[in-house]
Image (cartoon, rainbow, N blue to C red; front, side):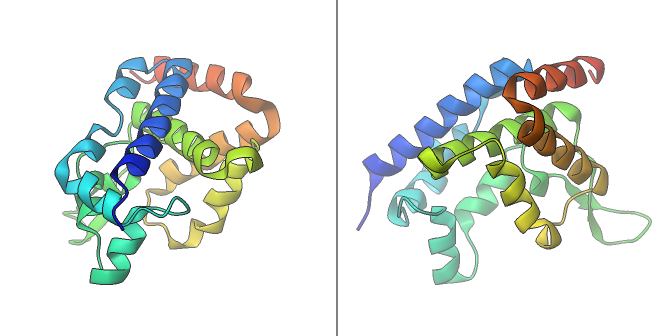
Length: 177
């Protein structure tokens, strides 16, 4: 069954939480543009078709075809995804992860925290995002410095809370322009 209304509500709730977090992180403009590609037909139609409410619709598309065109489209247009940041290395002659600019790491942090809140609901704690990050750590192709920074921020959130962490992120963004 196709669930366009439920999918729309979920992605819009998530986007609004990301916007709120991006404001706290000092990157409001990025927050306002966050995940707009999810409303394009390439991403929205599969999202509604494979919507379950308990996991990413991309997983359903991936199970059926072995890949997700919606995800390929999404990660190629949204710089807050580490998967966007890969390039051919003239040294190794293979595609490798590239270090992400701080403003996109900040948005990635906001995205992960918002996803944790939306998808975990009442079960969410400030430890949820780092727990999720650590579970998939060995399966990620991400630049080591980007991974270390994100892990540091997620750990900070778990240990010191949102106010402290967002203040720290604002400083990092300000000092890395």
